[in-house]
Length: 307
Length: 284
Image 1 (cartoon, rainbow over the protein chains, first blue to last red):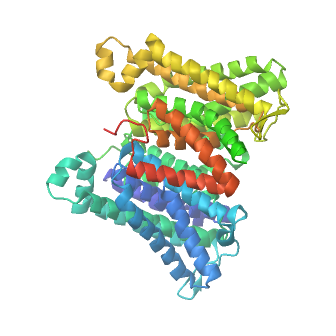
Image 2: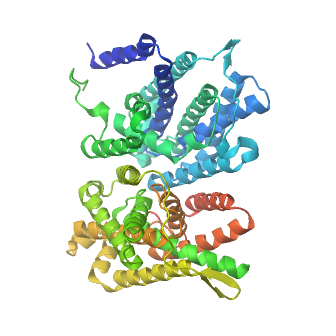
Image 3: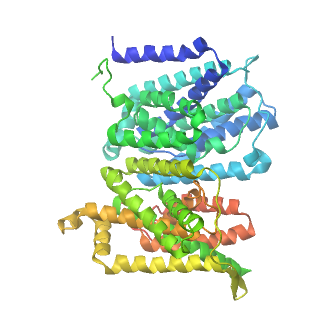
């Protein structure tokens, strides 16, 4: 059997686990995984460009707040609000992209970091709109064509579908000519530009797609939790995403997925020992950086590896 | 009013300069953006909390111990972890995130999440030109100034300082000239963390002490360093004073939240228009 196939079967089995155990708690964890996995994929897409973006949670926050505000303040239909959230995040990326993506390496990281802080502080300071630190309450549950999603199960299925869409969508892009262009841009920009690819345009396109994904996950999150505060969109969230991608395998789509499955349940599993959570995070990061530089996907799996 | 704003700006600006100097030095020499810099500041303050607050040692002895402890931790971190990643900007940055998390959670586990206070070793105020200056802030400023002068002397007048500047300018040529880059990396990291720890130790009696206290000064150092130019020492000095002054102005006129947003907006503009910063060498 092809090793990748085996892994897929395991993942499908894992996705069914919540129904077997059938507890609200497990469904909550599973739903959080399916919300964070697309986020990890969106960062993974940026890492494919060779640009570490600290702005992904901020974009998620833009999507989440847009969706929540449209639904609560203007009474927009929740599905439309959710999609508007995604589009809003994508628009922001489309506007800042051409300026931001000219900048590379450390400076790009610092730039997105500053952007993330500005967005986070705006959520926090603009209290009349966002409720500031005390938060935004009473976000309606999502309703899809007349069917109201009220339970964690519903959001789990929704999140799972969105995760699969993102995963296979990004994989398809990766395998197409566009993926080749993006890889070439990362490896040798001068050469690929000489061959006629428009570096900035492709980068902006990828950044916009990653923002769209982040914005929609934000919207799903807002509808699922029903409450928003600036907290989940700060620098900590970026650290989580970086941990996920580093452990899974930087720049690997499958790695981002595996990383999310492993890392997201950690805070829940360690609820008893919440204060050890960060320590374990940190130590895992160091171990992976020192010993497993290319993440889980680079490990030799017992059933062999496609060369 | 204006005099007060100037004084406040100068007082906080000097601490920003100390924080930013270490941060910029590590980048200049090792090309690592040290996200753990604020945690070394926190370590300095925690040492003062233990030695001065709990054991009752003299304040200045505790401050020196705080700086040295942070510096030693820095050397250990450099030797065991960062050394493997020299020149790899991305991995180095992620490693520094990891170290920051570990230090933060170790302090959290040892001292708990509560913010601690220690009694102020200096009280009272004095005034200059209509501005009121608290004595404890004055001591901090004088301490920071002393460290600045020492640091400047070290960089300009000692052989090690010369070697550091050489490595920052051109690591290959420096090593051809017989500079052992490994030693320089350790020394630079140690000194940088020592500066951060010293800043934290000095500030310990002024703010509360807790595992997350390093985050704000880290943000400030980050802003300063971008303003002045990553890797530029005079830039860090100029940037620190500039940030201190503009912040005290904006937070008097508007609010401290607005001041923070403005400083990050400033960072974005600088990175976009002139990534090398106000005084930095132009990016490669």
